[in-house]
Length: 481
Ligand code: ASP
Ligand code: MG
Image (cartoon, rainbow, N blue to C red):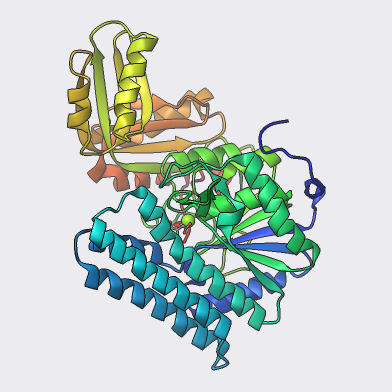
């Protein structure tokens, strides 16, 4: 049995749905009323809710933390007070005067804790990732309690569950990974009991804790991952990611207004898309879904009747090309080694990048050379210095990787050929074929990224023609909120 595959009565749960609502799907009273309608529309099923912080709150908390660390305590305190007031006002609007004392107390308690944390940050001038995790988690604490209370007000038996008690992670603050066995056990213990009693558990996404209870987070956008973790532990029949766009799109609609929704795609395609820069899902989301083979749906909470995108194990869509995506602002790094590559040298090179938290993709290797693609970062001079004597490191910033994605795309050379001709005047630096059969990518100047995506999208998705017409490129771009 793999880690995380604990047998339980939940293994056969055909009627359980985990519903995750992103920040824009809880951002104001209208959004939360829509959420209630959506939850009620699933009344035939057992339901677990996972909610993000209200739109913009996580960023504001981050700003408050930095402000406090830079000595601007007044600004930091004003920011968190505004966050608190926003939740209070929302509660007033939703409960129409009949205040909830319990909720008021909880929100006020969070505010007090936040204020005291910011005082500490100001005094210590320390805002490391551990402190950051504690601070950012308040967004989900606020929102999940507000949503729980609102659902109760609407007559549903919602019960708040602290995600930090259920999701156990390592202590890699800022981007922690679940410890699967402990997490599965705790999710089953805490949520399972509630489900048995007919209740509707509601928990904040994104937040977790180490085995010792130290708060962690799963990385920005991590609520999707939380939903999949809960879904896998409970053997859910589906995980629904409710957001503010119609699903996974064939290209970023901000770049390509004629981008369309992909109705169905495979776990692998969606995973590669997340890796190659599409903001549709937190990149780790599909790991537990794949492991337990749980379909994931990306749906629009503003238009819940639309079908959205279904992400499943096998699509058999017959499509040849499935996506145009772009990873912006990357640096192309050329590493010339002092001797032919061996495992010792490789280890040194990668650990130098690792030490500066600069993780990227290997684009190619030859006898004594490695090309990497990393996020543009100020750490490159330091990395080059660390590697002096071992390797000569050169790089070019301000690049974008434009990527075509589709099942077996590499086995069809005409696709690469057509794509290359469409953008060959753009000083395409490298053409790389992914390690899987599913991607072909081009490195262009970052300033040309939008145009490159538009041209490629136009080529593979001619206007007013069905998506499968050209073997259908379909790309994932929803700025899941
Ligand atoms: N609130 C967190 C963020 O903004 C997590 C999430 O929304 O998924 O990154
Ligand atoms: Mg998101």
